[in-house]
Length: 193
Image (cartoon, rainbow, N blue to C red; front, top):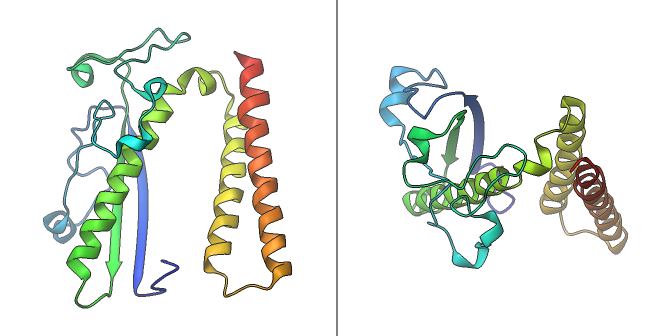
């Protein structure tokens, strides 16, 4: 639910990971009607099709080589040559009840989501040496910390005008989640390298 438009704007994201090269035609098992309405966007993590202010050479799959896996840097035909490979199938469902601006809002949301997924998946690949050896328990712990942070952030956006006390409480929760995440990222991960 969008904090600006309430129930008039909802975005739902579902993800399925498959060990393939993006050739699954219906990874989310959509109905015939849903398949007819869907728009497929292919995202190549070697693409630089995003705002250049976010570009970092150390997060560029065309430049990065993993020390632990010996994979990379990715070249032009990396999707056809790389082993192993995985595809993240994202199903983004937009429910927009915004008369007069619906098409523009859909385009804006789609462009924004595509940019976020491109940048996020580029980072995930280029950070492989930091997470490659983590156990399932460590990954779950990290996921919980990130989930807490997102929930706190979302709560602060959805809250009505808050009192000074509420703002301080929200800030301290955010600070705690950020601190826990930083500890996981820097302490636990770095000690494994």
